Length: 122
Image (cartoon, rainbow, N blue to C red; front, side, top):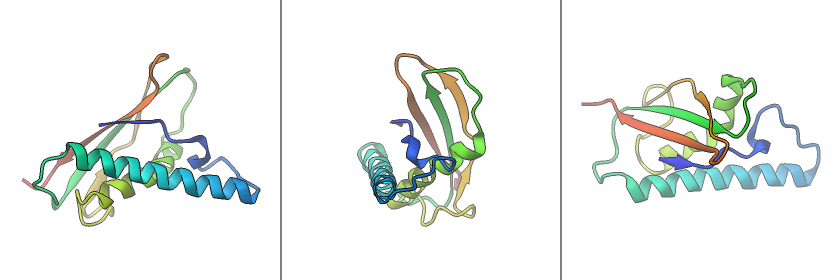
């Protein structure tokens, strides 16, 4: 599944000191969550929910620079919520969803987030 790179306001080191900044963060969180949910509902088979899944994420950025995996995981929180909203698993806790540390790659022409969701309950 291909998603946009999380908006910079979802990054945990991004501080929004204004009311407008907080509103934008809430808007971007909702957008990422709904985009993830809608994409899953359009592409996944109808044998949902699964009892357990594994999520692998690769973030393709335009520029090569040092990236922090912990911060990337935090900026993907609403994506994980969207996976739960789509009904892939009952909850996004470790009992149901295993989250691997995100990987980073470079694609100057098409920055994106590639998400692979694997079923683990078979």
